[in-house]
Image: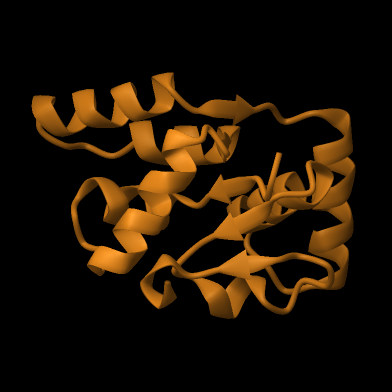
Length: 129
């Protein structure tokens, strides 16, 4: 099956808002077309907590409907606790990183600085594709 990806909130917003370079957008579209993309439940909360127009909210809901949303499982909770103890990382970012680590996913994010310090976490910026 190939590499599986966890999409950070900023990656989803930039993709859906056509704010990525063409190469990055095509790369993410290919991942989505192959159903290799996932979200953490925290990404779902962040995306749907955005106050946008009716059309923007529908676009976000449609995207989430075709995406595997990973729950806040006991394994993710324990990994989050470890990350919070070992790194200076915000709780939402720790949950996202822990989800990627627990499910062996590569994180797609624009926020490389906060995530690159997490040992074992593979990250990629769609702007660099």
